[in-house]
Amino acid sequence: MRAIGLVAAGVLLASSYPALPSAAAPAAAAARPMAEPSPKTSPSKTSPSKKPSSKPTAKPSTKPSAKTSPKPSTTAPPPPSQAPVTCDLPRGYRGTIKESWAQKRLAFQRVWGLTQGQGVKVAVVDSGVDTGHPMLDGRVADYTDLTGTGKKDCAGHGTGVAALIAGRDLNSQGVPLAGVAPAARLVIVKQQNADRDEHGGERLPTAIRWAADAGVQVINVSIAAAPSSALEQAVRYAQDHDAVVVAAAGNATKDDGEDGPAYPASYPGVISVASLGEDGHRIESSGLQSRVDVGAPGKDLTIPWPGGGYNPQAEGTSFAAAYVSGVVALVRASHPGLHQDQVVRRVLSTADGNVGDGTGRGMVNPTQAVTAIVPGEDAPGAATTQPSLRPAKLAAPAHPDGHTTDVAVGVAAGAVGLAALAALCGIVVPMGKRRGWRPGKVVLGGREDDEEPIVTGTEGGTIGAHH
Image (cartoon, rainbow, N blue to C red; front, side, top):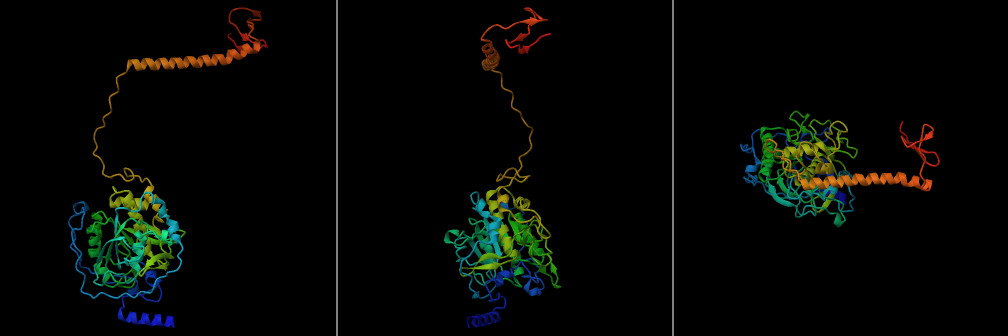
């Protein structure tokens, strides 16, 4: 009877809010994340931005440097006139949770003695988050809703992504789950209200620009959208403001129904992330059209779920991108002098290595990303600005000190004398003991003589000769 009731509730919910995910199971929304299309599905279920706007939603900036506006220079546009919705997601799993293979594989806790992401702000452009979840309580520094539907997560997707990046470590509470950079602060930009939103792509450029103006160092975009001039300009704007953009490398469905490269993952300078299995191979069954820079765990993942529960069967490039964003936060905290493009280079160059098509540089490696010495950087954590080249000046040699020289010569001579005396004693004293300290014979040409001696012992052992 309970199952029948749940089905009926799901039908009623679907008829009222067609954009909300299915209520059949906790994993339903996360199993089809925004950046992870499923093979052979209809376009409406594979792309959050089926018809992206060709008109920019925000005026491109003419100021390329982030250093001129470290603080937010703009405010988020008012959300569209839309009544807040009531979320009715299925209850998350609340039983015993085991540590996931992904957390063991990445082993990001090894670098927590060096960095946990302190002082770094990460923007999560997604479906919002549940700020009351134990993993996210106190982790959110700012929350902006661009949808007009309220500061809540009606998909569960954004909650999972944000927690994997910078969620609180719950091991002390008996839950073996933690974000990669638990000391980082989260800036939430809700740009759609479900795991799939046909109109959310039109707000994506505005969301990215707002995050950049908020002074974040990392922007996670677990969304697959079609290209547009507004989106490309927004990505460049963020990069010019020294923000690393990390995006999921899932396919996007074009107007003709065919899969194509996903954006913003395919724009230059963006870290494009694929989902990998335990062996490092890509786990997507469909052909990947997007460029891949690096990979991260993307299957059988445990993520927080709105309402305090968990989803132990999440998968997709959306969550793989979250792991990489967490690693980027660790690097930005431990190497604050690196510019965003240098951070990208460090993360890619320290990955585990390509193991097949669609794996890029391989599995992201948090320990190496933080601790490795990367050629081209002045030093780990040092500023990367190069000093001006000037003629080298060598120090003049010091004037000789006569007293010091005499002492040195005397010490050296004494040492040589002691060595010679020790060598002589080592030869003469044993010989004298063997002879009973009697003089030896001097023989030359078969006769005794005092010239050109050949010294022999009493037993006839020859010691030295001169001819």
